[in-house]
Amino acid sequence: MMDQDRITQYIHSLDQGHGAFCDQIAKTARTGRVPIIRKETANFLQAMVAAKQPKRILEVGTAVGYSALLMAQVMPEGTDIITIEKYEPRIPVARRHFEEAGLSDRITLLEGDAGEILKELDGSFDFIFMDAAKGQYIHWLPDILRLLSTGGVLFSDNVLQDGDIIESRFAVERRNRTIHARMREYLYTLTHMPEFQTSVVPIGDGVALSVKR
View 1 (cartoon, rainbow, N blue to C red):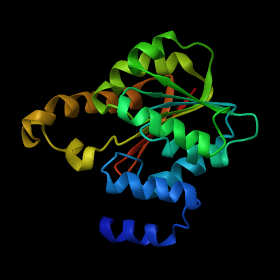
View 2 (cartoon, rainbow, N blue to C red):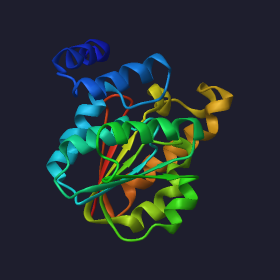
View 3 (cartoon, rainbow, N blue to C red):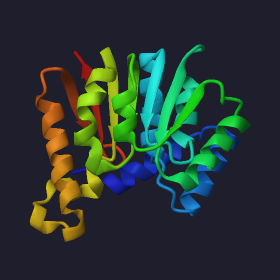
View 4 (cartoon, rainbow, N blue to C red):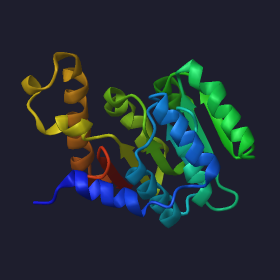
């Protein structure tokens, strides 16, 4: 059996970084315990965006703008990103990062509750990156399905919950049981919906990769 920690360390040793600006954002975020995408997942995200070449990207969960900037590095010319963030202290930080990167005209940050904003969005997106409140994924899914174009990719991060997902509800801390149950429901739903072809990939904290049929 593979030693997952050693495999992850090896993958990290291959990482070339994402440029001085993004690398500094990541370093500052991790020092300040801001939840950003893990290193190995970041490279996977970029590879999927590069492969899909989306015309329009939706991100649910901006944080300080790190993952949006990673996607912007590999998205085609003319592609726009709409990203949603609720936590007010992080919003001006993300806006500053987009401005400093010269991408304020291509990345639109919408402030507020994702559930409410998703209901108001229209049009379609070729790539959707989910990285916000994990207990809400299942509630957002109907709007995500509506907004995702046929052939579009849904990239859901942190679906394995540091391994808790494989435990029974009684084996996880009481305060995490609701999120645990909802994520299990989300993964079961994704893998059994006829509208999606889904693979759960054990990279980082787990990614559910779904293509809309």
